[in-house]
Image 1 (cartoon, helix red, strand yellow):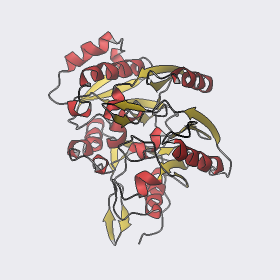
Image 2: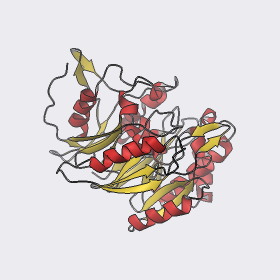
Image 3: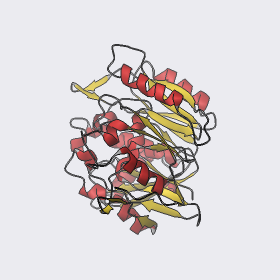
Image 4: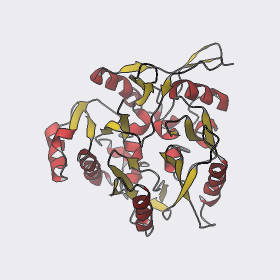
Length: 356
């Protein structure tokens, strides 16, 4: 069904590697936080301001939005004006981790390329056409080379859907992903594609040689199994993963199954990974709906870690774990108690541009 994988010169750097900038979208879709939207711009402004102190932020706003009004809110949060650049691109939502550009490095030329994977609203929402155009618009505005990834499927070119939150790389040929998100029939992004098909194009375009397939994501995740809620590379050979000790909790079996897989996983050199276990917060409900509250949806910046917290008793414990491990970065907590009502946290709304 597929041709053999050709030798590929692309590699996607790990998030923990040096970044040139971070892409963020200013919130505007009130339907994503029914009843709570008024608190969201302040949360996003806080995130932008904390990042801007130490690195560049590329902020996307709608074409009809007032840049000066947004700047006022940012000033209240103490942002570094010279580190924030505005781009006018119409979007459907703020979750640029999934809809935005995937940056890779051509190891032969040393140049930066954007992979323009298709986006279809997680095979759940109908309003995604603007988000699907974000990478192309960014390529035009930043004059960056673009590639539309494809594989040969059923004797024709097939351009796959792939979200940034569905995989996590270590920059050295290994990737974390889940069967639930990419291989199940529910919210099926690419009908008919099998594990070997995913491994084909991930190998070809992201330089992946080693695939670590976990089983399922956490309850409340409306993306149906995104990896960035449960397991993340924090160095080339270290993985943070969430775990649950309450046997009555619905995530208990799921996370323990995943932990066993990680303990048996190896890197491209056949070495075991160091595993750091991060506890889960207590199950969180908003308007009787379970939301995907997790500490793993953090963002690694050049000099800071933006850690989501939820007014939970485990917030302090997790902060101490992060402070101990990321001893060369400042740990900044972000209250995501309302942001998570949009079914995403800090990682979901950021997308790094590596320094290539």
